[in-house]
Length: 444
Ligand code: NDP
Ligand code: 2IT
Image 1 (tube, rainbow, N blue to C red):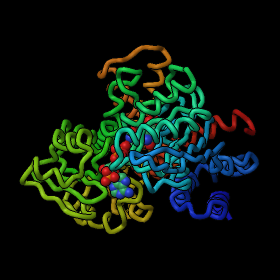
Image 2: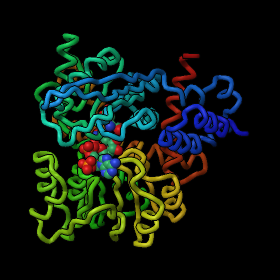
Image 3: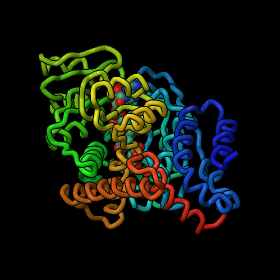
C-alpha cells in the first residue's frame, strides 16, 4: 500500500466519528501523491505524514456561563494547535452549535496549508465552541466570551497562538474576548486579530476574506483569458465573507444574483443590494426573510437552492459541504465557468471532482479565502510595530498576496503535470514550505 493510502487509513481508524477531518485529510494527501512518491523513503523515515496529521496539541474545556434568566449554561470550548513549523499558530474561532472536535480539526488542518500559501510566517490552528450566539443578548454573549477566554488565555499569546473570527465570531465577540484577555493577563498585545479599529485592529480586515476571494477569482479567470467584468454570480451565505465578496464582485462589474442563510435564499434579478444586506445582517442581526422589505422585486425561497440559478461564477461562502454533486451538475448544466470557495471546504469531494472533470475552473478555499488570514497576519505586523497602515496600503498588500497565491497554485500544478488542477496546486504549494521547515527543525 502506498504511504499516502496507509496514512489515510490510519487517520480514519484513529479518529472515528470525525468525517470532516477525514475529508480534509483525504483531499490534501491525495493531492500530495506526486510529491510524496518522489520523496517516499525520506518522508517515511522522518514520519512526515504521521506528524502532519497529528495536531501538536489540542485543548478541550468546559465553558460555564450564566444566561439572562440566571440559569447556568455549559458549553464545550476547543483550541487545536495543529502545526507551528512556519510560525505561531493562527486561525479563527468558530461559534456554532455544530462545532465538535472533528470540525475544529478539519479547519485547523486546512489552515496549515492556507497560512503557508499566504507566504507569511503563520502556523495552523483553529478553535471554537458549540455555543450559539444567535438569539442571545449582548450580555449573554459577553458572559460566554469572558468564560471562554478565562480558559483559552492559558494557551495563546502574540508569539504563540493568535485566534481570530470565523462563523459566529465577529467584531462584537472579538471585542469581549480581547477585553477579558487583557484583564486576565495585563497584556496589551496583538493576541487576537479582527480587533476594532480603536484598539489595534487593521483597516480592511473586515473586508479581507471576501475581497481576497474576488481578487483571486479575477486573476484565475485572467490567467485563462477571461475577463471578470460583465459576469453573473451566485453567492451563498450572508455573513462576513459573503457580504464583502458581493461588494467587491459588484465593484469589478459582476452581477450577483443570490445570497442565503441557513433557512433560505434570496434571488434578486437586479443584483443583491449590499447596503440592505449589511443592515439586515450586521445591524439588525435578522433573517434574510427581511430582504424583500428592501427589494420588492426579489424572491425569497425556503431551503437550499442558490446553485440552481444560471450564473457564470459560483462562490460558496457559508459553510462546509454546502455544494453537493447534484448542485455541481445543475451549475454545469447552466454553463458555469468557475467555482471559487469563500468558505472552508464548502464543496464535497464528489462535487469538486465532477466540476474539474467538466472543465470548470475550481479555486479551493485554502487558496481562495486566504485573504482573511493573510490580512490578520498584516494586523499582527502592525501591532508589533505599533503602527496602523492605511486602507489602501493593506488592500494593495492583500491584492498582491492573492495574485501571488493564484500563480503559485497554478505553477505548482503545472510543475507536477496537473496543469489547471488548482486543488493539487494549492495543496502542493502550501505543503512544500511546511515540509521544508519541518525537516529543517528535526524531530519535534
Ligand atoms: P458568518 O458567521 O459571518 O456567516 C456565516 C454565514 O453562513 C451565515 O449566512 C450563516 O447563516 C451561513 N451558515 C453558517 N452555518 C451554516 C449551515 N450549517 N448551513 C447553512 N448556512 C450556514 O461567518 P463567515 O462569513 O465569517 O464564515 C463563512 C465561511 O467562511 C466559513 O466556512 C468560514 O470558516 C470561512 N472563512 C471565514 C473567514 C473570515 O475571515 N471570517 C476567513 C476564511 C474562511 P445563518 O446566519 O443562518 O447561520
Ligand atoms: O478560516 C480562516 O482562515 C479564518 N477564519 C480566518 C483566520 C484568521 O486568523 O484570520
